Length: 383
Image (cartoon, rainbow, N blue to C red; front, top):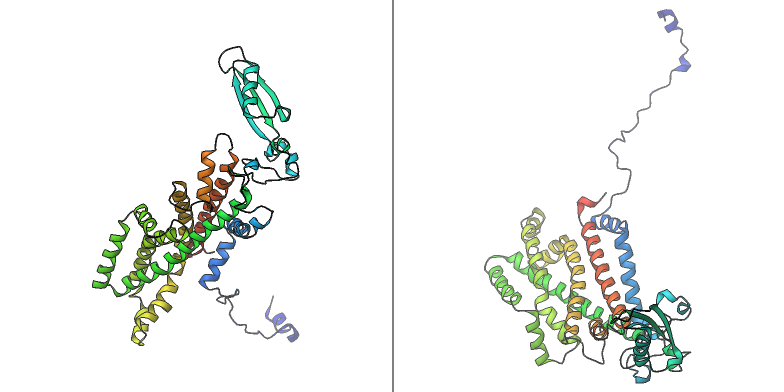
């Protein structure tokens, strides 16, 4: 294009250039705090969310579950002892094992001998159904039969339902299971809160002041952690009656040591940071610095450690009750129910299965939530 044509371009084609603000460095999304990022990461963790729902469901059932039928936790009646689980509607689904029948296999050299063993255990033959599994060849225990005993009909209890069966004294397992779950959760949460309060205060003071104060406090902690928990439990049983209070005290005497050491280590890292030095320069008291500056900055690891404390306390209570040092009858806990079910495992396995499932689900769920919280409070996991 020559210069003459360039000079003849209409002026209407020219538009003034409008200078726009540079938005390349502008943040389009609203800023989020650390805890908002942690909550977002936690809610995106599906296993942790499902586990929280399960924990919430079990907590609700531990409150309302005992009121869902007409049986009390201490209603004893030997006529209805060791009744198998029976649930309306679900009793029609045979493979669930909730049809209210006692099932067992018997062996003998022939079918007649195996059947005689079944009749010896179940007294009313008209309610006994025999299924031959193996006719045998005359040798020892070569024949095998399966016996189904309609015990609800045999005891004239057609309209009675024990959803999780009954124990050796005729008490409803459903009611006792949820009451025992409530007791175990109360012990675990109270112990966790005491560990949190004592551990954070002790570790924060020890790490912040340091020097001689730190040395003395850590030597005391080392002495306490060297005392076995079982010894403390036995001492508590001499002073207090076996029960919730003695277990909580025993858990609280040494349970906070781990929390205090974690808090002490974190405080030692943070106390020389610039924001702490600035607070000291402004005349802020030591208590305020610990409470408003140090503890909030280590709150993530405190929450995580507390969450892992709960399943440990549940297991410890169950262990004590299982060996006879925890909750004593007629009170129930998951450990005492498992102990009772273990004694009847071969003939009445349902007495062990249901409390074992609840305590297993609880511990797995709390550990998954703890893992989710650990990831949520890890800045590297935030996206």
